[in-house]
Length: 377
Image 1 (cartoon, rainbow, N blue to C red):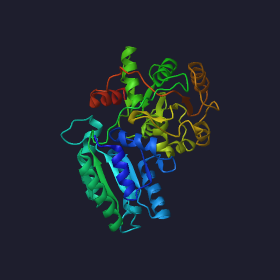
Image 2 (image 1 turned 180 degrees about the horizontal axis):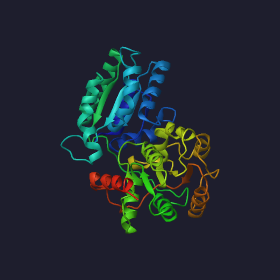
Image 3 (image 1 turned 30 degrees about the horizontal axis):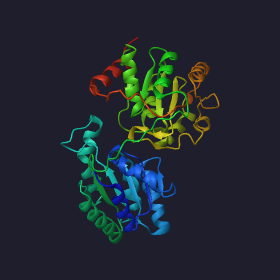
Image 4 (image 1 turned 60 degrees about the vertical axis):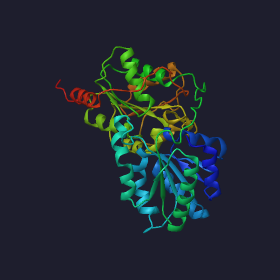
């Protein structure tokens, strides 16, 4: 495990003083160290990775200082457009350091949603003509790599990437439990399950929501055939749910979203003004954190999702809910409305410590859902 104090100090000596990105579990040591030692104005947790590239570009234009953008490799897809059409040497030639957590590194073993991304990570950087180094678990070697990376980014006026394998940028797990709001995510999901029709289709966002829905089904001895577990593709669970709701107007469809996931692709909510999907209920399980990757704060508790949803065409009850009773009442009220509905459910951070990792047959699960959605009445 690299010493994060040495890592950050080396970057600062090389003139890298500004950081932005999306937190990653493989980079949690670095992300947590930034959170404790760098001001909010110098460490901007972005809505998505492409957003972070653009923020970093703006910082360079304003200061001529080389910024660092951190992300999981699953977020590289979000960066491709701004990297190749904004930062590229043939366009505006904007230097920056990319720190990329390498989920799914070949030969290390990982969950299915990370395998292909891990395999193609170096190749994606090659395709974008971005040079890179793979960080070793050695402080002295990493110091030399950092100095060279910043020097080359500066002299060549282009991005330079640092790929972090598992464990290299790790850190101690933060205590993320709080009691800001009374309900946990699991409790909120169970309220929804209790008060929606038995054949409701669910699309659960990547991270904790998928795991908790999966294991609640087992606890309640319920079928999982109506559940879509969006184990990857952060920010897209609501669009999957919308697509299902639009195609199957006779079925109730619920998206169990996260605050950071919803903000990652917030534009998806704007489509509700153009389409009539009264069978669709969009619920954001809002704990104000990137909990699955370390608990770094999001803007979830700082913004008014309800007003955003209303402006996008959703029917709401006009405010967030914070208790079981309020959530139950909101579901019952909105069920009577002939419009797509939205609920911002404020919850506290933390989950049951004994909840095991999510391990299931993806193909069997999706084939069961397809069969359920296409069965003849």
